[in-house]
Image 1 (tube, rainbow, N blue to C red):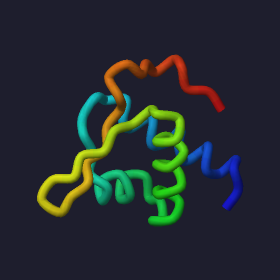
Image 2: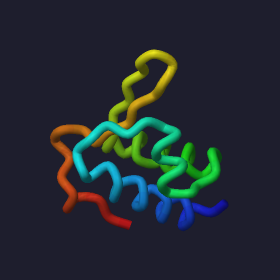
Image 3: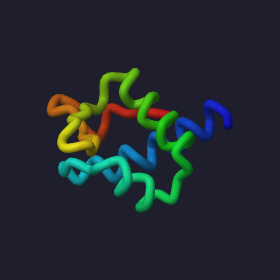
Image 4: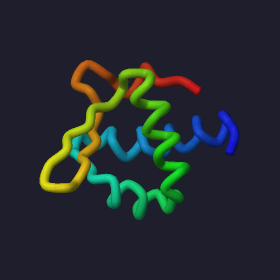
Length: 76
């Protein structure tokens, strides 16, 4: 694992979240075909940059983009 890989995976997550819906953790992992540790690192990257929100409902975690974040202000 490297910072470059984490950034690449964060960009992949970002791309899915740009559709405006809430994704649950398993959906993200399966759609992107990432290992748990790689998805967790990517989500941590985006969370640290204050780009995403989390909701915990019924034993499931939903992830989505913050309202004020546009697709043009995320750079690698």
